Image (cartoon, rainbow, N blue to C red; front, side, top):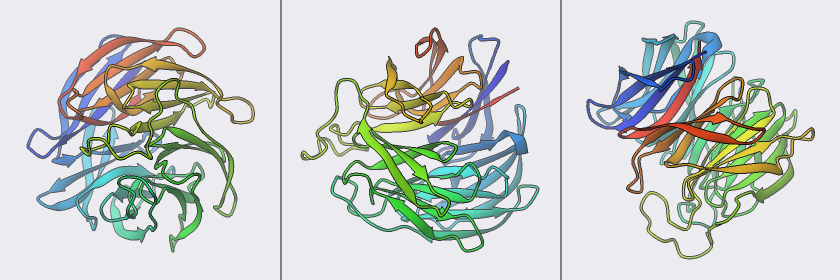
Length: 354
């Protein structure tokens, strides 16, 4: 099988954009260069079934959304639009039906929903403001970190690190908040992953994982909430240490992913350079797990459809190099690193298969 690994860089110069690496038959990933040049923090989302990719960037001081046709290694521009955000877009996702894209913005305190036509052209963008605050550093106001479409596209789930909540927003003609879950103050929700109507919510500050049920009306039922780290768990209630990007007494959890077959869950922890591999049981529980050591500060995790490979992209931050690490499965919950590639300004990643 061939894997196309699209990597976004956080680069404000002409070197920014979407870089492509290909890996075939387990061989070392090969660089194909910058396949879509764009400046700014380059976020990426892909819907393979619609050959559709969403990319964010900046033109001068304007936030931009680019919709691309993804045909194997080839990317071509379908449409582009200014996003009325505040210069700090931090996530993008595409609905499963390919009819909408959504971005979040740290500073703007909102999500921005783009309506798409059948070809991926942008028909308009609507802003949905969020609200709230909590008790930790960077939680003095709303600070949405990500927004994902639910598997049935009925709702968008916005993880708000500042408000310390996951918001459920109706995905209809009048998008609005219809549900919210807090969990415990100060943990800082960052990303979610889905298994049917089960939602796994990862907290950036403490590494807690909340297991929730998303109800028909968009509200939540909390099933459990606890940390799963083996070893260091930071004292986030103490005075923040080193307020550069993230305090050193934050765990800096980043990504959470459910495998395509629903049997495994993966979560990355930047501060401790760990990647957790959880077995998902019949009830959706994840108590059985192992920890992998990473070299980089893994911000983005992708898994091959057969669970054979983990693609882990380490962000360039805290004086650490950006890097792509590839792990191969060796047992039920065990993987070993087979490749490690240093990548300047590495930031975010999307992976497609052929």
